[in-house]
Amino acid sequence: MDLRQHRRAGRTVLAVGIMLGLGGGAAGCTGSSAAADDVKGVDDPVAALHRAADTLRGAGSSKAGTSMEMATGGTRVTIRGKGVYDYRHRLGQLTVVLPEDPAGASEHRPITELLAPGALFMKNRGAGVPADKWVRVDTASLSDGNLVTGGATDPYVAAEVLRGTRTAAYVGRTEVGGTPVRHFRGTADLSRAARSASAENRAPLAAAARGFATTEVAFDAYLDDQGRIRKLRQRFSFVNGRRQTPVAVASTTLLYGFGIPVDVKLPRPGDIYAGRIAENEPPH
Image: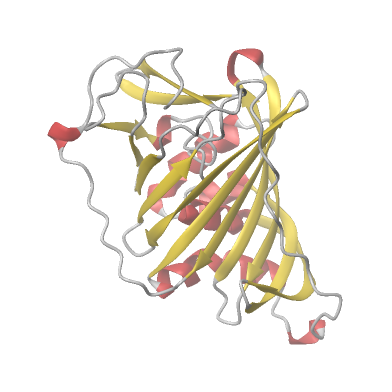
């Protein structure tokens, strides 16, 4: 995975590219139960999904696991992340692990990512950035709204995509991590999500609506009995930079451990790297 960064109008923009030959397995997906609930006992699916982001805010915080699969030209890579998220303050911290090199060499150093309203901070970015410095990315300037760029979808932004749900169906009962959930399958529209999103996420989602190959996002959402997202799998079609080749992206977010203490501290201005980013050097 080659994450490239360059300056545009004084703002740092991160572009996502795929290095051919990288290996990666598909993330596991919990199947739905054939013995579904009586559909009469389920709220209107579209309304339930529209409420999902607000329900997360009510939950306060959680642990999070992420998996992002990208496929292009017969090559598939998988990036995984793990961390915590504070939904009330829109702050999160993830440790993101990139795939092995094509030759099977040891993995790149994990990248620490801080998620904040309007910004993505990355440490261990590589590409000439000192090890003790952070790179700051303005998410409103990204053509994917930070749904793809960081190699992990911001959990709250992923939930806000569901505000754009146009159609959804109740699939049935299943379990995620031992927790009973209701499985919904549907399609959301990024433009509609941007109009309904919180003030901090309107610009990033509007950018994604303009920058993706299509505004439609197919998804499978698994909500617990409190309406909280336990698992969310979303499928995007991202245009891969100079090649203009659509890349199939499947982003999976797992949420658990609700209510845990979360203390995310953003970098001080002096800790943010302001120098030039090497164009062709992948993170390491």
